[in-house]
Length: 143
Image (cartoon, rainbow, N blue to C red):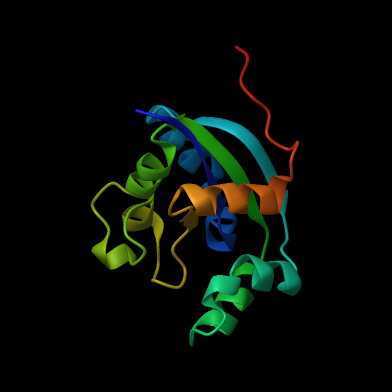
């Protein structure tokens, strides 16, 4: 197993529902460590830039509106196979298709409001972490 880092976002509906502690607990219980975190209210420009890969898709404007509708918490998770592990903890994008006891199955309302985001691969994790935390925003665990 390789130690990896992945970006995770608790989306506006997760923050609104006060699920931050519950979600962090699930990450930590699965062996992932939090190595960076911040709460922020994305601007339209930030959301458009972050989700630029979806710019041509019909849901893009709704996605930007949703991601700017309230504060989010962005964090970097680290651990063995962190990308795959985080995606397993999140569950399928559509909560109706997510495995039981995943974040999206337990708390997601719809494919549009599905509580969390996670990087889908090593390259996207590197780019997404840099987007929110730059070169020096991640704090390695020393204890």
